[in-house]
Length: 362
Image 1 (cartoon, rainbow, N blue to C red):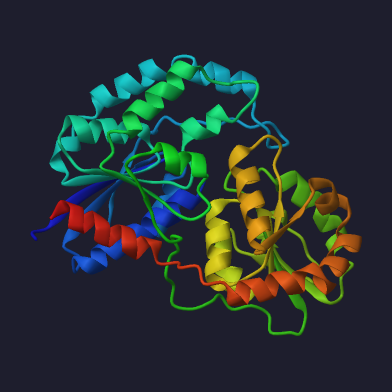
Image 2: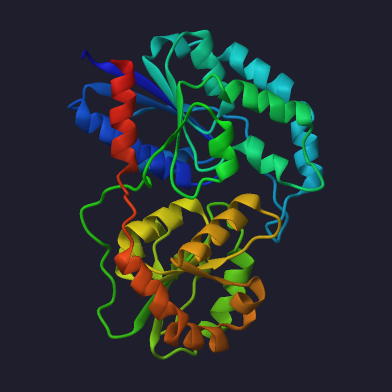
């Protein structure tokens, strides 16, 4: 196979999809002995993408999907309604102005609907990667925030994908609906070694926020009390600018998920990338909910049922860690740790996707 060209359309929502696409692109490179070039198109997190992807071309262009949140993480109904009112026109103009698609051998999207339509129009194989879809997400919100016609438009475009890869914990409704769906293992990056941490006998906890900082005000509140734990060391981003003997500040230019296999517990929102990394490195999770977020709620339910995580309310996280954590670590944590150590979930989704894409192209 001669050298190939691929364009990756990255959604402008969050960090997780960037990490997943990095894992997939690295696996494709490995299988092709680097005989491939990638172009990454995104806008909101292009700086992060540039720090993660090496030797790629970048296109600074917004990829349409927008998700507006209130301070508590719940959907901002007014902003969402306003944005999606004219989405179809925005989408069609976007498709019309994508003039360079035909130079690529295949496209990957996570999860930009227009990429599937562009691939279909140019007879280019197009592959989706997602753990949920926006048509499903918006259909779960009540009162409805987008019109049914728009959800139908999303579905129409997504059906044009050559394949869409879905990892474990994807809602069953999605898997049953998408006829071009393929189940794959969890998608996790490979890295050489764990991040170095303080070598002491303390129990070690990593606090992770979302890419959009939804938990920031709650973490600020929780930090006011965690310095009272003598036997727990907390690892938090340095943006909180906290000095305490039991707090380690992680530089803002480092990915927090790189520390997952170095700690005993991760406290986080139930973002899918964090979940995948914790399962891969067998680190127990204590998950924080978000108001009216179908993806997060689905993840928490599935993980709770699997015995790989537990749940903490926002109120307990903000103001009740002093009482909650000792009891949790003494009791439920032990069961979750045992389940983590014994699970047999595969985490080679990136390799499976890469091989399937190349088989399809051949």
